Image (cartoon, rainbow, N blue to C red; front, side):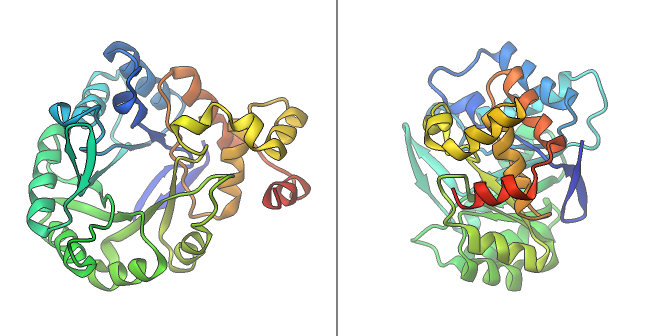
Amino acid sequence: MQQRRIGDRTVSAIGLGAMPLSTKTDRPGREDAVATVHAALDAGVTLIDTADAYAVDESEFGHNEELVAAALASYGGDTSSVLVATKGGHTRRGTDWELDGTPAYLRRACEDSLRRLGVDAIGLYQFHRPDPETPWEESMGGLRQLVDDGLVRMAGISNADVAQIDVARSIVGPALASVQNRFSPGWRFSADELAHCAAHGLAFIPWSPFGGVSAAGSLESTAPAFTAVAEELDVSVYRVTLAWHLAQSEVVVPIPGASRPASIQDSAAAADLQLTPEQLARLSGA
């Protein structure tokens, strides 16, 4: 598979967003979920994105991290090249999503993620979302401390604007490796952040590259230009969408969610799909 860079690591151009394996009310059973992760690995995927808050509710906090760890442990092949990216800063109250960006909370969350993932240091630890109650500089200081203390090898931020990216760069320093923002055919409002990442050598990791769990199933009707190109190439609209993401910049590493082996297998194939300049022009104007 085509490769890309996140910090000092080389990873597959297409990653696996593991969130649907834990947060969907109709999520797959454990055996099927593990099979989905294994299918991703078989397809050459070496980036898996998870988070401590990915669970149906507060009672299962950490469910997704534990699932990813179990899937990696039970895989028959070599997983030494797999980068597991997790996140902290979101909390759960019942089924609600809340925020805590204080350094003290990030420390506890990171330590708990280390335990669930069964590692000595997290390969990529991302601050999940800005907390309005905590100054961004304080959250970034907490993230930097996790790096300095050896709990985290690389740091990332998520749902950040250009100004926040620059503050993170100044505080976290060279350990800052990535920005994970929402970006899809129907949501291109992070284009400035993507360009900023490209200018400064940061990986840009689009979350919900198909528009999100609720919108992905209707992508064929909501993104007709992408559907037309897919019909021309006799591939899925999802594969075309990911190829379009990859064509935005060499720093882009999409993480499509999947809850079935067939879904991630199709997504992984996007790394080998070349769109023509004419097709890209049509999709850019869509």
